[in-house]
Image 1 (cartoon, helix red, strand yellow):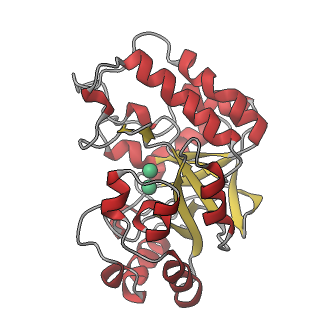
Image 2 (tube, protein in one colour):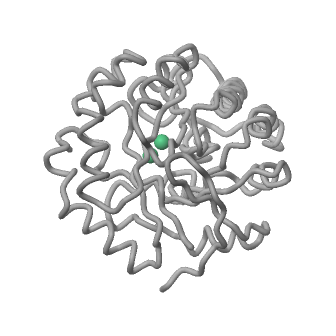
Length: 282
Ligand SMILES: [Zn+2]
Ligand SMILES: [Zn+2]
């Protein structure tokens, strides 16, 4: 069994309207690549902030400019016109847990992927609203990121913790967003209590290989800490185009093999089971 659950049906760009991308023909393109790559369990997880209902949760200007679609039309499209699992990528917004829970619980998702893209009003992985342009150094930003990640896990809102060390997205070559020095496990440690208490599945995401980070999320040492804590593993590419389905899964599978992961988390209507990792069909 191979999964790709954290998949977007369209790029994160203006004009990528639901009309153009939530179509059976577009889904067929994703399905074709998935089947070429031996991925049986395919699900979509659109960004929550692209739906107008998300503005009941948070009114960040980035969300206001993106919230154009109807979440129930999305759910209906995936359920009735595709054979994909129905997921969503929802941001963790501290203080808005009840409002996010209402939005999520009102729909029958197979799974919810939880992300930390923002620390308060500032974004980790976008040029716009960038946290890296302010006065905080990497030490402080990493601390706040992993503390927030632990809270996201503990919130119980999510089934899968997305791209768990997203804070490294800019890699080491970007002087604007340098990595902290020394052993990074002091940061990972800040999220571990929440991860352990929640039992949330940890996403192994090959998206980091497409970014300046040039490394799978999470780093091997963080992944090992999660495994020692007994966390289940979910495998995804965070594709935003069909050709990125199963992106660099050879690298992910060899990492999983190296750290002794033999089962992947599979979800249906927010119930989790574990299935043996299957070989990728080349
Ligand atoms: Zn994300
Ligand atoms: Zn994503």
